Each structure stands twice: as structure tokens, then as C-alpha cells.
Amino acid sequence: MGTLYYGDSGTPIGIEDRALAHLKVAIITKLRRGESFTLSWRHTDDQARGRSTLWVHQSIPLRFVFDEPETPELSRKWIEDLMRSANSTGGVQLVPEQLDTDPIPTLEEQPVQVGVDVQEVEEAKTKAADDAKSA
Image 1 (cartoon, rainbow, N blue to C red):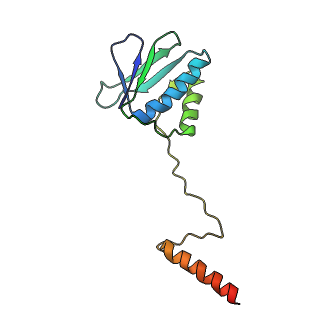
Image 2 (cartoon, one colour):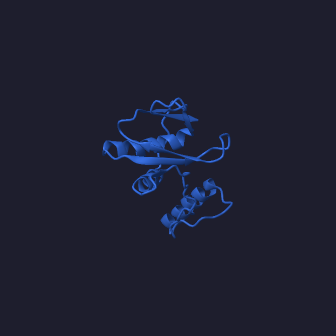
Image 3 (spheres, rainbow, N blue to C red):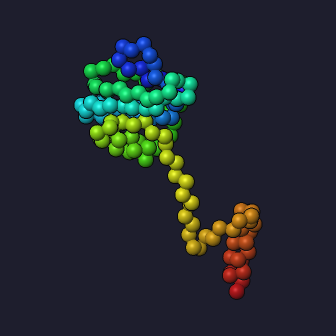
């Protein structure tokens, strides 16, 4: 769980490391452009029920603290979603990452055979190539 410290408030904001890494990119991008905006999120289960909003401005101190020492791989789509919300009248909405769950497309010449061992497929290709050479 990462932490966002904003202004001189003594109340740290706990945000999961991966979400905080994506949020950091969106916030820094907006602030570099000199753009102020709001940042909103729903409270987690361990907090009082509700939601919070901050007014984010470049003159207010901001610090991101991550529990994990390594930077996670960032999702371009998630950053784009955060930036799109940042450019709306509602400001940045800390939304969950939308994972791509669409099926992976296959090529016609590479049919998917359920339950076939990869090794068997490779052996079949080699046998077919050998048969073609001897013909």
C-alpha cells in the first residue's frame, strides 16, 4: 500500500502501489502543464464510508511514497483513462484498472488445439516437413 501526502495535512492517503504509480503519471503530467484539477476517490473498506476530493495545484506540496522498491509495469490504457477523467469537469477519478479480458486472436494457419502438448505439435511439424522433402 503506497501513500500520497498532500499539502501540510497530517492525514496520509493510502493507495495501492500500482494505482498510485499510474495516478502519479497523470498528476505530474497535469501539473507540468500548469493545470489545476480535482482528484476524487471512494474510501476503502477500512475507512469511514464515503468519498473524498482534493483540489490539486502546483503550489501545494505533494509526495508519493511506495511500499514496493520496484516500479510496476504501467498500463498505457489506464493512464489514458485517468488523463481523460482529468480533462473532464469532474477531475481525476481514481478508477480501477480495466484489464483486457478479450480472447487472444489466432491466425488461420495456427489453429488452437485444446489438450495438445506443444512438443507434439513441434514433432508433427518436423514430420510434415520431412515428408514434404522426401516427396
